[in-house]
Length: 363
Image (cartoon, rainbow, N blue to C red; front, side, top):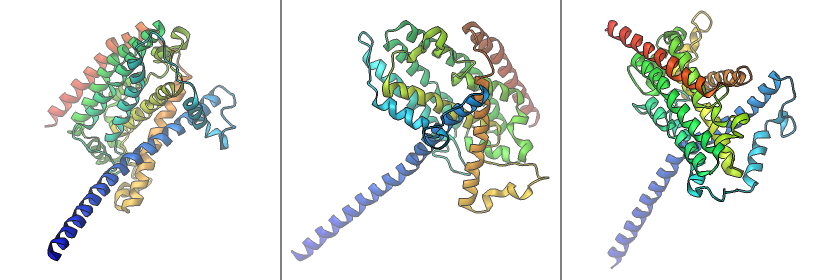
């Protein structure tokens, strides 16, 4: 009887140990995800503050200055205000579509961050089809906008949703063709492999120099995908009140606000990864030859420098996007579609053909 009791205790302790290991494994799996979400949230808050400060500087006025030092907590204050506002539902609208739309827009963009390498091997999931997963997932966001527009039972909202869907379809094709050209050059669709392929030749190995036409097309298409001026037709204030956001208030309106900045940040990160060498500093060897091997200095130090370099390049592109907003006037809808279908699509196809020909000749 004593032996049986001992065996039962051993089995119980073993099962407790196994369950503890499973729990520990789940926690350890969730840590990088929560770390990434926290980093993204801080990044979005910084972008909002930067946009307000840069916009104020361009327009020669005072930006946010009261909420926190230099107004850096203004975005947090606005978010808190939206959380506590009343959530109003349109009486004759489709409540389910109206409620699901903002969530689809945010979740589809958040999934794109899983394939972005922030430093040497610092990526949530290094997939063989990383860049195409981003394109596939980001194309779901306009479905959420269309659902929001339709569920609002408002002509302005529905028009905004239709415009968002038309704009997304028009500019995703040139964007995909540019990404395909990069994949051909790098012989891989993995984001990590694309960055490492650029690092072989240093500064002059960036795809910016090898694909200048593709870079310009990608830049224009990514601005259109983010619905930034001069491509903000789905939410044009002078024409559609606020487009698909017209009937929204409270936290759901806040989700759309966050989704637009998340999309801008993910586009900037992909410009960095695909064209600007990612985490590699790649300063010409004349100046700093020893920084070429930053990954060999030390794992933690090298990773930290890699993250800093990636973010520096990303925020440089964000600065260009923000200044573009206050520089160019908004296009008409026909001009927007003509630019996408009649100019960017043929140019991106020609770029792909040139890239394919050069790769075949180099064999």
